[in-house]
Length: 304
Image (cartoon, rainbow, N blue to C red; front, top):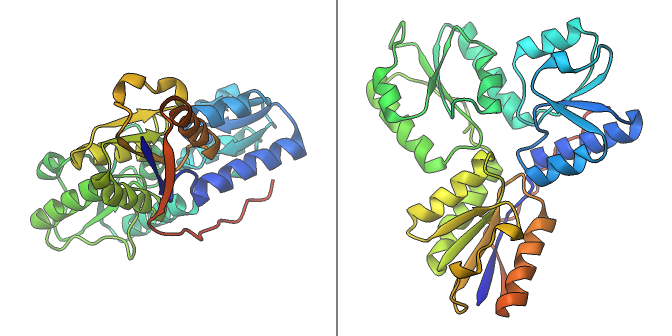
């Protein structure tokens, strides 16, 4: 067996920033420390912080008045910020700056009188946060059929934004369809889909053609991890989204295959290493790292 380790993979700058912020907050303030939603969408990261006394909540009523509360990397709607202030919570904002950018674009477009078509996945934490910035102006678009059905006040005043962790190809297809119906539609100055999502997808696109099977390390509720597994399937290569080595089925492999291993932007490198170790031990796999691009992005950790 030959393993190709895709690079880049795993933690992005936003995830690193959020995890560092939570670690620092624990060191300074101790536990219990509260986080609104999961800090990132990965079960290993969440469980490791739970063991240290972090309490993840989906409702601020579960947070005692005056407690420390950290916002997850996915961002929150203004209503949550107002409620936290009303309850006297000491908040720490670890929203990814690339998500904050989308929030600001939504506010700007709404102020300028646009109907905003937000391309994203219903129920995702990031989408909920973005829609909360201008609920009266935003319409959620998940498919090209949604584009056909959506009603807008003025077809000449349509703007579009995207969730940062979408499939690049899916988003591009929906945007093309959107512009066919609304030729005057305007978008953000720069792509909303984050650099890390694009880079990890490009690595899979380029390396899957050399592979017989693709393993994507990431949790099922991680949007960008699911998109990686779907992209591999689109390339005609069987793929499996796995949380860790315990999810690997030896029957997937014949022993002489080439296996591409990558990881979503919220998956720890330590879990990737455990998966690779299992394949090396069981199949005597050789390992080769293939670098598609190098990432230099860093985000400042918020004060805690």
